[in-house]
Image (tube, rainbow, N blue to C red; front, side):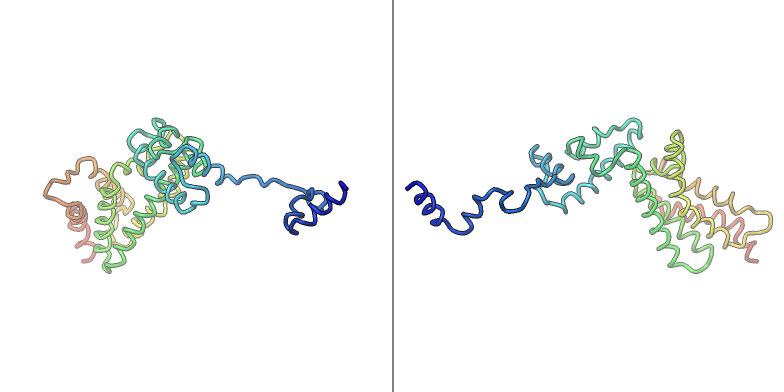
Length: 249
């Protein structure tokens, strides 16, 4: 009787219900738990803390990386790389400290990304300005204007792209110098194309102009009458008066 009741009970179930009652081994499969991905863990941590996206919200995570870069740039520019901790940056973007390491392994890696972006933006700005001019001195003037306007636009991040910002960290400083090299080549080529008089060193002239332009943000007053473009043109005009007419006969 007991066997008939058991058979009847089993037959009364649907095929899916019967299958769900079978042991995994009887179905020829072994239960394997999938390990959560790093992104899933971070999503859950932030969601549990009430400060992050629901699992699977990838676009927001990409935007978060951009926010991290912007906030880190502000903090590092203001306090220096040694005066800024990963915990400071995490707090500024409302993240758990551990979650920050998903985006960047260290402050140095973060600084490299910031520096690379600033230099790339400056390069595009200068290249676009130079492309609109044809004569050598006009091209140099356009580059100087774009350079100074770009520096003013970066605000306090100009300290990050200064040559001596990370001079006490050799490996990091070498990487930053390599990133700046492409940008500096732009101005080197512009000065080489000027056809300067014999005995005039284009490298020294280039350093003189860039040094003057790079110092402007230190004393520049946005409320003053002279705009960055006017200041840059005046610097180039001084060089052009001294060397331009003579070089071009």
